[in-house]
Length: 422
Ligand code: SF4
Ligand code: SF4
Image 1 (cartoon, rainbow, N blue to C red):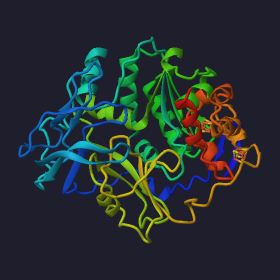
Image 2: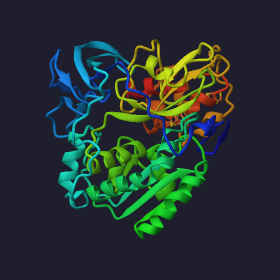
Image 3: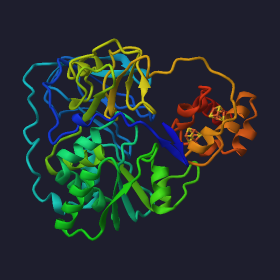
Image 4: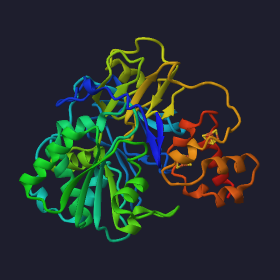
């Protein structure tokens, strides 16, 4: 790992044997627990009762708000409980538990092409995404450019890479759906230079589609290349002020999972109830990418990779930079969970925190060019205005400064503390 101006060149630790043209689809789990609360403060209400039978894809919860959120059964079976269960981000959450009937019976329309999907209006696409459980907020400003983010710059993660390799045509259809929904004029698909073969594949398909509005951009691998503020800054040279959205400069950034899910929802009438997830880390017996039903417990997902070779020091849900360390494996996979990592002691840094040695490495690695060292030194003394002056509100919480600090100072926590008191 070394700092480069505005980012980190990390040891990718990406297992390329886990990237292939096909993605394993294991048998559905015996049970799932689907949380009804989201980290974004949204809570949805169950539309099913304990004892009811459900098929795969059937609606089990919804909100009635403008930006509607809908949840669907990810296995077929009986609703066994609606109660509080552990949640990876919230501690606990009201959740719907389904016990499998081992039939894996889905709604009849799933998998069948929707007739006339190419002619759907923007409002019809928006309605379908909402009803299919795909996170989507309609921008309040006119959008010129859709960026599809396939960078995947955190170490270990290869789920987007696999999805792009195995389903390039479907992903381009998903791009077309979002492009039409937004009324955009330009489409940029952005990859890092560790996915050159995917870039060539997509370029050839764009050429044969004669899409003059679309292009593939390949950027050098660095973390956090895929953060939307960094992407818009490096591709379009448009700085985003703290508290402002990329919408305000006419841009929407979508990730590969969402784009693929939009294809499935609009074209083959399949709600969002499963996703591709990377199981990796030095402790995992057979690192791989697999399709995982939302709500599958981490302890069951780990079995898809033949379990752990040795006990991990830390199990992380998500990437090593932005994921959450799990205290228990009795935790469900969420729609946004990109990976499960089993990390050994030599990778997890548990050493003691030392004073700042003013090496400047955190400043060099910061992608938004603020001064993490000055902000955190100010935060330690409760000098919140000073922390503001050094740019605390611009922090995107990428974790680079914490990761690179030789004194192992809790940089992100201190910056969050400063911002919470401003
Ligand atoms: S966490 Fe914030 S301060 Fe630290 S490197 Fe990332 S953006 Fe900069
Ligand atoms: S906070 Fe850490 S990385 Fe930054 S200057 Fe101090 S010792 Fe170096």
